[in-house]
Image (tube, rainbow, N blue to C red):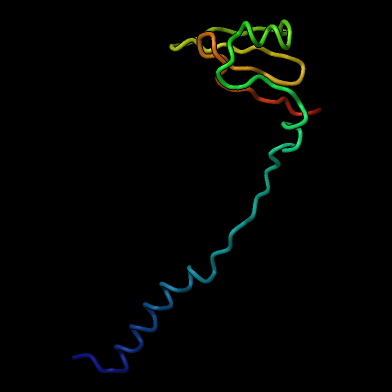
Length: 100
């Protein structure tokens, strides 16, 4: 049979083992710059769903073209300030290049 003093000691040890890691945990804050948010509104880029012909008509010939690769076929058109990703003939996404 255990005495109340032993039970209390066991309870205190158990509680400290549970609570110590919780109270001593420290979170490190990591700040990752996402680029200039205002820049996207200051530069004209192709909208999702535009055709390749529409992109060429508005922004001209790209500096380079990569692809298409994969299924569905994805290609990249590289312009000076952004890259346009196409799925088949339609704009999937446009990524602004970081300033260097």
